[in-house]
Amino acid sequence: MTYILGIESSCDETAASVTLDGRKVLSDVVYSQADIHKKYGGVVPEIASRNHILCVTQVIEEAIGKAGIQKEDLSAVAATVRPGLIGALLVGLSAAKGFAYAIGKPLVPVNHLHGHIAANYIANPDLKPPFICLVASGGHSHVVEVTDYNEFTVLGATMDDAAGEAFDKVARVLGLGYPGGPLVSKCAEDGKASIPFPRPVQGLDFSFSGVKTAVINHVHRLEQKGEPIIKEDIAASFQAAIVDVLTSVTIEAAKQKGMKKIALAGGVAANKCLRTSLMEATGENGMEMYMPPLSLCTDNGAMISCAGYYAYQSGMRAPLSQNAIASL
Image: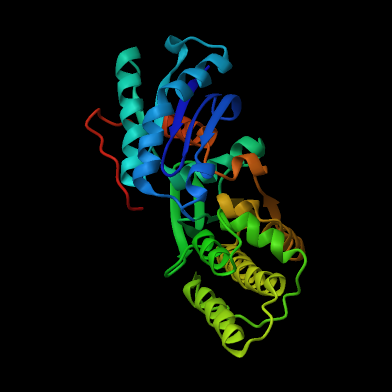
């Protein structure tokens, strides 16, 4: 039996989890700072780092306690080392180093995006590589070919803004608040996707900066003319543009690679419109669709523990000198 402690702190969630043999979650503790950053309209890196420091030890201890095991039962300690906010990453990684050293267990480095992909293994016990995975979050939007548990190839990506970032910025323009994704999605439920916002795609790469700017310009024009701003229609039209691009590129990538399995991951994977669109598109193309529950879409320790399990099995280890890396 392989018990892996996974620690995640790449942004504004401090999380820890223990899994058994990679796919069985024994505990998953998440401390979210969403309410703290809400008043600033987005995550403030320095504040995020300080709050990670305040609770990381407690979160780790709670995760081990809820798992019903002893610290010595752990096979390894896995931690997110990249990408993310550098200060936030350093807190979780430093805690993982100290804990691993104290109990004499190896430290396993995990790429945050690999963690999001691994969330699908927890939710779908029958899922195995190879498959295509759309990873869409506040900081990343990538179409990835997963050839094995530790082998990934980026086939396409955003050339500028990530999908979640675009949602946050549009939410700010419409005065909806933070975090933007859920608020824009909720607003869109009462609107009509009647505004033809751009959908730029180049091969398997795409851009969301243009659609964000188009929304801003549209709102400004309405303000200047003194015309009513129907937020619901703007939100629905913007969301439709984002979802259309992500769906079409993901399906095209699967066709090019001859894949019949598609997975969805990341915070934007919680978007109801995107989930429905991909389910319909995969069905129409004779493909299978896999997606995690909403609780595993946002940052969590279970996905890091799961990814850490497969990295551990492959012999991947990190020295105690391992540094955090902000870039992908």
